[in-house]
Length: 297
Image (cartoon, rainbow, N blue to C red; front, side):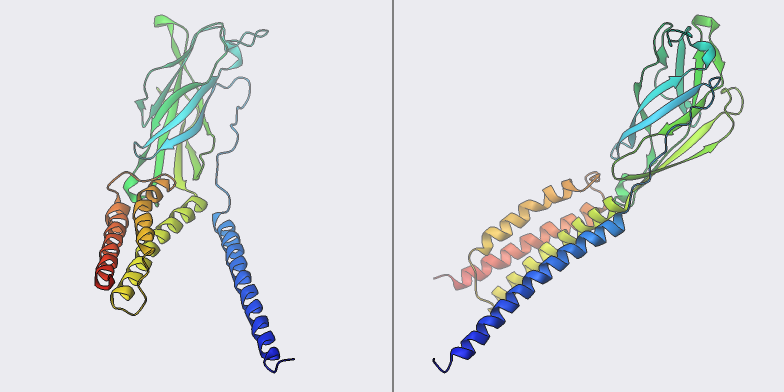
């Protein structure tokens, strides 16, 4: 048996242990990221099921579906549950014309949502404006309300207002949704029934956005470090890095647009982060090609 056999065996064992340790570290980092994200994100706050009350109540249910932060608009479905006096007892359809008039801060929203006599009240789509500043992404929040509704019963000049109660429900992916109610359920000529809804980004979406921002900071930092080291001659020049720089440069805009609820162009992230990333990556590419020029044959 050669004298250096035990030494080679120990070296091989150390190499295997080092490889296993590397794999273990990668697995632990991945598991830690999953557990950390799960702990940070938690569950999104959503509005509970609507309270339809007793049969003598007229309830206007507003179900939130989606939000466009750039236009500060929320898409919603509206349906009215008339009081028992306005329903046919056997057919379960309205026995008179019923119309819903939504108002936001006592200002009417679009046109009346009408249900003719003899029809079953159906969901109707509407757009509700929300107050908020999308340029503050990802720390932006929006407020809807005070949101109320009038219910008009009858047809023509014989229509009358009746008391109604607004019930806002639904969930928005990536958002915490909360609401506060104020005022009794009476018609608009008196003290109205209002509901104010607040939308803020859920912790999971916020953590994802901040993680992508960290990626955008890390990419140009690494690119500049590698380029400067090659330019100074402290590290060997590596030709394949040219494609690496190009890939990073063209990946920035897709990463920016992939962010949940991507902010409008020109928001603070473009001024403070995205523009700096693009300039830093371009500078890193210039340094890389200067190093190439100096060392090319």
